[in-house]
Image (cartoon, rainbow, N blue to C red; front, side, top):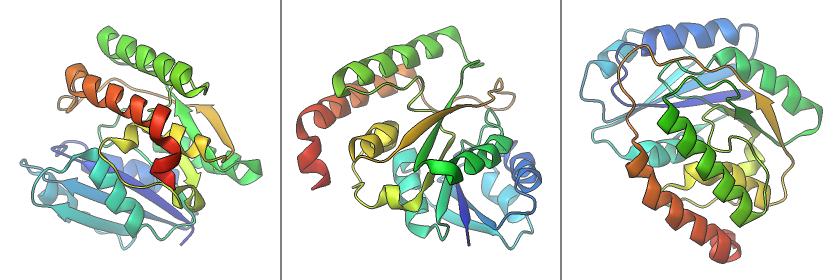
Length: 225
């Protein structure tokens, strides 16, 4: 298995089937697996996933919602691919970008982070993201436009020293960079949300972001030791 595409899913009954089809179309001809982590969905998401007949699809089910951070952690542990890609399940990302990023990764890079340069979200969400990226760049001495973009492609070795801690997925790009891996950015497509509602509000992220900024700034070396 060469490529693992990992997608946490929570209450996305309207998107799982078209998302799976889009991934299949985008990855045609490649050796890949898809890992859906059903993160305690309370709607019809799990039944929709069970409708999919695809030997390349692996499904991990949580009875209770444990959050994207833990979902990604479990997905990474279960991945068989040498290359890992990540997406959100809300159909705002385009799986075709994963394929393009894989080509770039194979040239001379360890990790490629997407950049939603024409982001189709509410103004408040875009402003908060811009503020968070600026703060992360200043505090950690890095320089990324969209470090928390859900569209990422990277070599599995990038996970070798990443330890699980709450909310670490929001700083995954910075953590990998601070370990010395070669990282590039890639412009990716972004679409308005057509189904459901966002599961993450600004205030839900504010304090965790501040907390992890401080951890990475002052305790990073101890964290990865």
